[in-house]
Amino acid sequence: MTHTIRPIEKKDNAAVEGVIRTCLIEFGANHEGTAWADPDLGRFSEIYSTPGNRYWVAEDETGHIVGGTGIGRLTDTVCELQKMYCLPQARGTGVAHELMALALRYARDYYAQCYLETLDNMVAAQKFYEKYGFVRTNVAPVQTNHFACEVKYIKHL
Image (cartoon, rainbow, N blue to C red; front, top):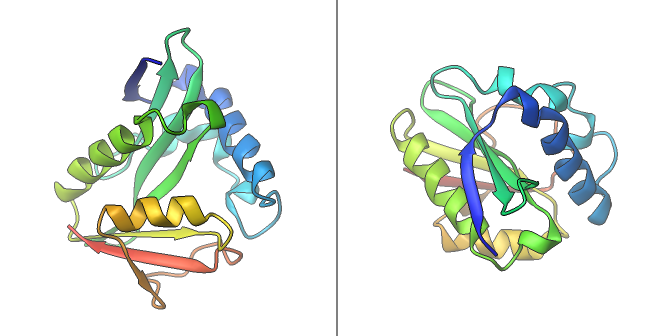
């Protein structure tokens, strides 16, 4: 399966929200304290359009969005890997690796560290993050609205 990765456009907002909500339902995370309740889910093209904030989508050969990830500013020196989700049909294809590599390259231009939060039951995702040098931490650089995300990681860029 061939994928194209590109920056998000306004026309992608609803599709990206659909991917995220589908994945959250899959992992039982369709509730407060997760990305499910983020008020900006349908506005990514606007939210991620300033320096230091970016979101990329992965689309399949038919033009359907099957995944995405973003980098968002937390502090002057720390960003967050945000909303990294891939639909089941995109998993195992290498698209997540492409998204991660792109996000980390971008983050290095602006930040010293990259933080992320995930759910305890997202075991495959945790192994994936650890492959990229993310290390578990108990200290969040800032308080986020994702109080249901029990697992936190940090990476020095």
